[in-house]
Length: 237
Image (cartoon, rainbow, N blue to C red; front, side, top):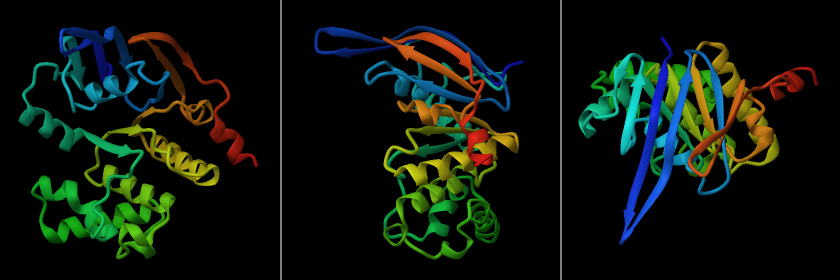
C-alpha cells in the first residue's frame, strides 16, 4: 500500500462570479521512503497541491488516502491531529517565533502533542544536534544565519518523529552554499527512512530528490525518476 495515494483530486476557488480551477484531477502515488520534488511555474497549482497533501487544506473533490486513511473529508481538528502525528513542515520563510530560543521553537510541536516539559527538552536537544546546532540551541532567530534558521525549522519538523516532511521552497531565502547544505540534510533524513516531498521551482534543487513531478496548469505534466542525483556529485567533490 502506498503511503500517499490521491485519486482525481480537484481544487476550485470562487472569486466573485468566477470559478477558478486550480487542480484539475490529479492522480498520484508516493511510496514510503521516497524523496519527491514537485515543480511547476508560478500559479501552476503546486503549492495548493502540497497544502492538500500536508493536510492544511482539503480538495474540492476526489480522494486522498494517507497511510491507509481517507483524509479528504476530515474536519479541521481531525486534520490537525494527522499533521501533528505524521507530518513535519519546512517553509521558505522559516516561520520561527522571533523572541524564542531555537530550543523553544523546536519544542512547539511537542507542546501541542501534550509531551511533558522534560521529555520536550530532551527530544528538542536531540533534534537540534541532528541538524548540527547543538551549540546554538539558546540563540534566538535574529542571532542565527538564514541557513541556521532553516536548520532549526528542520529540527522542529522532525522532533515529533513524523514519517513525512513537506518542504515548500526551503532554499528560497538562502545562498547557493547554504542551499547545498540544507539539501544534503534533507538527503540524510531521507536516507534514514523519512519520506520527503519538496516543492521548488529550481531545477538544481529538485535534482537532490529521487523523483521529479512537474505540474502545469493544475495537471501532472511529467513524472520522472532522477538518474543523476545532485547529492552524488556533492559527495564526490
